[in-house]
Amino acid sequence: MTPSISKTPKEDVSQQETSQEFKFIYKDTEYDCTEYAQKHPGGLHFFEKMKDEKSDITEYFRTLHSKKALKILKSFPKTQTNLLESKDSQLFTTIKRKVKHLFEPHWPIEMTILLVSFSVFLLGAFTSNPLLGIVLIGINQNLAGWIGHSQNHNRNPILYKIGTIYGGIVAGLSSKWWNRKHNLHHMFTNNISKDEDIQHSYNRWLFPLLFPKWKFDSLVAEIGYKEFAYLAIHWAIITQQTWWVVLIGHLIAGFLTAVVLVGNHERETIFEKRVDLPFLQHQITATTNYDYKSVISMIFMGGMQYQTEHHFFPQIPFYYLPKASEIINNELKKHNLVIKYSPIWQ
Image 1 (cartoon, rainbow, N blue to C red):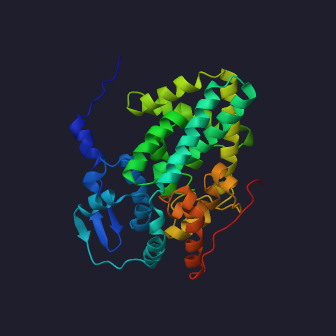
Image 2 (image 1 turned 90 degrees about the vertical axis):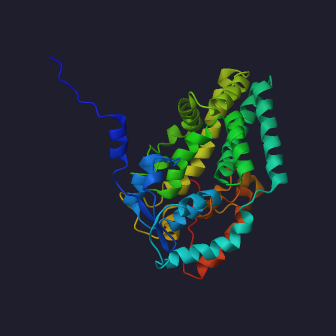
Image 3 (image 1 turned 45 degrees about the horizontal axis):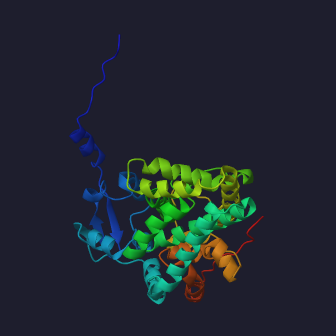
């Protein structure tokens, strides 16, 4: 005999999901964000993670969100006002004021990068020379990943839209899929229970599979959505090349990119539960930089040799990170805060 299963009406499920309150502090004011929880791009799941993490989200909010998002936050009901803003928030504000001029994209650089990358992408897909195809596909996939990463972090609306299209067609990656998981990484850096970017094996033999895995995840995430069209264009172009040339190029690019990313985080502190550190100290503890300054290293590392500065202000385009690093480190020294440097391979 089949047991009966009681079903809860959809409206009751919705009420259950929002039964908990979500109140967060921004600077000197506490806002009730409960009604917005299910509308947020990160979803209710994100709000639950953040509620478990901390109540003062000032620096975490400012590091990722746009002016439009701040207006939305300030439209919520205020539950407490005239709170004492933390010293860490004040220090973050001081540093941000000094680097804010670096947030806006340099359009000649952006357009040049896009043109070069798209040209390399097409040459790699259509060349009849297998060795050249492998090299070009590998270079482009590595470069396109970093370009898309930088553009999707930026909150300039035009560049963000360009990054979404570029990332889908040239890199073969979904910006929606990437933003959902990667923004969690910035909010909960190296928290093993919340940071999905570090919830995987670090076996080096898996490094080459990074881009094949990301591309598969992107396709799955975009089935039935607009960005699937961009991914379809990508695959229509890249499959003009011989399959094994495409595969080897992706494996090489995956290995090179994974070496950079894993070194930035794997050897640093892993948090088992919540992170009881102020924002700046959290990022310094969970990340490390590489001591490479050349233009070539900027291209092939996508500015991730400045990983900690990037985590402070991910909206800064990668080509401005060297300038930002000088300003940021000068301010950190005044407060006895020091960014770590490590070898890229250990």
